[in-house]
Image 1 (cartoon, rainbow, N blue to C red):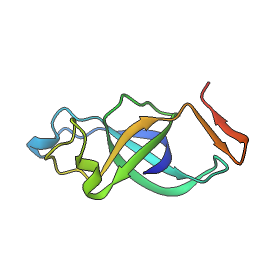
Image 2 (cartoon, rainbow, N blue to C red):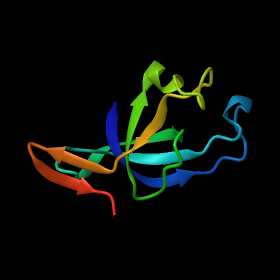
Image 3 (cartoon, one colour):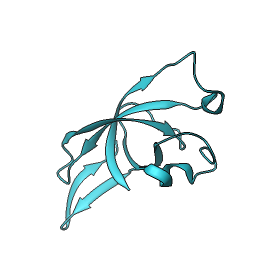
Image 4 (spheres, rainbow, N blue to C red):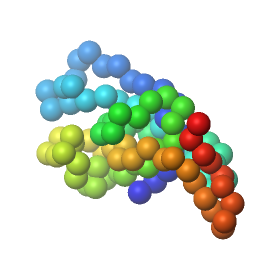
Length: 96
């Protein structure tokens, strides 16, 4: 799994039928200090995340292992919303 922040959404009125009804989020990767500095990824939202939230996501074939994305043509899926991040005994992020 990878960690990132939801920085936006994608709206697409024309898409493959298997993508109908899926919410698409724009993510930026994060480092262990909680700084947003990674690559941009468009991911399917399987957990109801929103802009500004820190999430865990997976990519590749693992992205198709949720009930929401099973047998769908996706390459990244948000699988969890992070409540807090602790590294070496220090809190780096706490959801407000």
